[in-house]
Length: 320
Image (cartoon, rainbow, N blue to C red):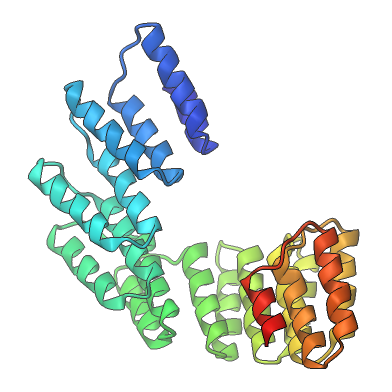
């Protein structure tokens, strides 16, 4: 079971299955923990058929599936934004007398939030309370994410107020969700104020925090602020990843500064930061809009040298 868990953490379903086969070969009986780990591995690898097969095998072996077993399958469906089937698992749990827990509803809430389905989030939250399950920081972070997805920061702040009334503290995910939401709608005062509050808490801004700020400020042409946040990452030893650089490239392209965008790509290569199609597309788009097609073909060549195929965005740029 420990070995299988190790494979699950690595999302190595084949490795987990090999160890499971070894157990059977050596006559070691699988128990509920074995099956829960295998179901979890299948869910994390998006393998519905395999996850359902293990649930069936448990029943055949006389082992009752637990809340943990079903939560993994709910995670699988919500990860696909398939809320119909996720809900069917809740019905199956009720039919089989398996209780739902806090994690069951947090996983469902996460699925509704990914779709920006605030009504679904509220219905799920209400159901959670009816079942006398206490909401936690994850619950409210999911609610906030649903509002943010829809661009409704008033709703997100209502979730924060409810959270505070229950004396539930914000964590890094909650702070990052709020900062991302404010940055996306161009409410820069609230974004920077939330950043200060995060800084004053026990949670420090991370790569996700700064990427949201660079993307948001850059989108609205606030290039100096976007660059300032990028530089602040360096001063605070916060890791700059591909998204950080790509957001800055897009910001400079948006204000018509292609030259600086090109320099940032060179910096990425020098610092061995992974480039991707999103790195090249804004520059190709900028040159195409200026009618500089020699530069367009040159950058398509750079993209090819980096072993990246043009994606749907690249082709849309070329067609336009």
